[in-house]
Length: 341
Image (cartoon, rainbow, N blue to C red; front, top):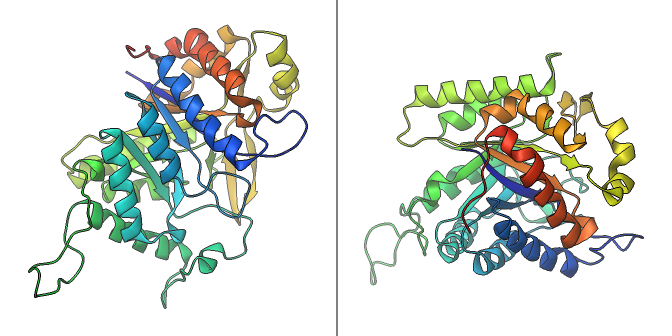
């Protein structure tokens, strides 16, 4: 059974047509869209995390608000840039958010992506150790964070008060199995499997072999699962992929996305951050055709979770309508059924 949720980039901008003109608008509308998602019978609300941009940043206040206003859906990130994080403080925040949600947090993390700041993590006080690069630092932070959320001791106690290493508090049992690594290559997917993290793969891979994007991503998923089996972990991993799926069912949809259906119906290949990269096409058009096309997407077929990117600047009402149209007209073709309300 597939799970389907939305993935919001959390933009806000005071431009013409924007329904999210301020950061407050974006945050409150994110909570409202999560509530609408639950009502539609969909399964999750996920949020991108960016710094030094007009997008959502520190995720845990937002995720806690979503947790408090919903009862069933998962909530999470796609993804937290671990270069920026104090891993022990993040462990406390993540555990508290997960406890508020009743164990519904699905936390996507990674080494980060290109950003507006030249060296943003350094402005937050984090710099690679000698012999490290930024990716090494992100993985070091990840190792400390995962150790902490496991409930293991991390701090020497005051011998007048306690003995043995002290864990961070609170602890949320099971959270350590709900950490996902945002992998941009097949190699990093294998690394994530070897280290016992679920796989989160987006609409971009920073490599290209000449095959269609969905086939390359399906190969990434296959390699991840093979590596997981070889590592001998004691729980079943999950895999998510992201897609833009925009059914055109009325004049409003056509006004927003009619031209995009002509421009974005094929993969894009180019250099990103110094590497040849391939990004997947958007699925835009008549619902019946989208259902057929999405069912033929081999990576979607291989994943258990599909994250639908949403144009959050268009507001809650429009995005709830969009998600409802996907749920009604497209999602059944890939094996999804609505959750009971």
